[in-house]
Structure formats: C-alpha cells, structure tokens
Length: 234
Ligand code: CA
Image (cartoon, rainbow, N blue to C red; front, top):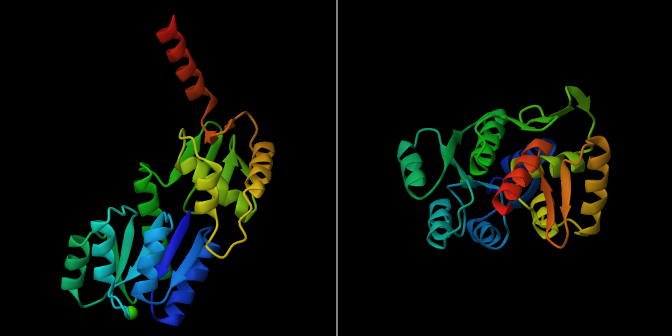
C-alpha cells in the first residue's frame, strides 16, 4: 500500500513517514499544499494523510480540488484539537476521517489501516485467503495456523494482493502501489517476490494471468467459479 503524507511541520512529517514505513507502507511526503496536490493528482495512492494548515495551498483547497477532479482515494485530515469547524469543513470537502493534533501515532496508523480496508471492501482487520491469514494490525501472516516469516517487501506485496483478493492486478499497478516515488522501479523484481511468496505460501494461491498480471484467490473459490462456468457452458 502506498501513502502520501502532506504536512509542513518537518518533525511531524518525518515522524509520520518513519512510522508508516515501519508499518509496511511505501511512503511519499510533501511539505506544502501545491506539491501535495500535484502528487495526489498524478500518483495512485491507497490513502492520503493531509494537514489542513499548509503553505502555498491550504489542505481544504487541496482536497476540494481533488474531489472536483474525481480523485477518490481515502483522505485522512489532520486538524487542530479545538477547531471543530475544521473537522466539519474537512468532511464536507470530501475527507473520509480525521485525527486531531496532537495525536498518538498509533491512532493515525489504526485509522489508515481502517481506511485502506474499507476502500477495498473489507470489514475485518484480519484478511483470509484459503490457508493464509494476514493480520493487518500486527502485520503477522500464518499459513494453516503456522507463522510465516516474510521480508518487508514480501509482506507489502502479499498485503496488496490480499486486500484485492480475486481481482487481477497488473505488474504496473503492483509497482505503483508497492514503491515510493524515489524507488528505482524495476518491474522484474515483482516476479522475484511473487516467486518467493509462492514458495512460502504454496497451493496455487497466486496465479499468473498471462499478459494481464496476477490474481490471488483461495482454491475453493476458483473451483466454484470454474464449476459455474462449466454449468453455464454445458
Ligand atoms: Ca500545518
């Protein structure tokens, strides 16, 4: 999952960037509204953390402009503790949630997880695909109940596939959602990570759709789809 942080206070920006990166997100940062608006307009983010008080272009205008242009990514706004009117204006402008300053970083992380989950249609913080379970809260993965050790890149990839279970995802989409803007993007590395995931999580859960990309699905659901197709044909 890829996150954009727009916050002009350097220390706070850095704190958010580090915490999100440690939690397994690819993170891009901006320090003013103009730069932030541009990034959100041109890059595909899974969630944006947007401060309202920003130089060059205020957060509310950034948000309004995105929504007017049809940008639908989930946006979490950062507001001043005592400004209830900011929260109302922010939500009216198209924010999905807010956190008041000063905040505990854990609260921001929990709200980010929830926004990503809901945007992908998941209610629970634990994702399941056949024998694989992924706890988005603890970032732990099990296979048939046994813990599986993944590197941060493997986890990022698995998390994206599981959040989008059953949907074919192109290599380009994976690259765009797994790496930040400064990462040296080589889409071949995706294939390497897919291969490693398949070894650690066997059973044909991650399928290659030739020329299209990858899809992760539990074997049962694929079978029932095949059965349905067979019935339809026959
Ligand atoms: Ca600010």
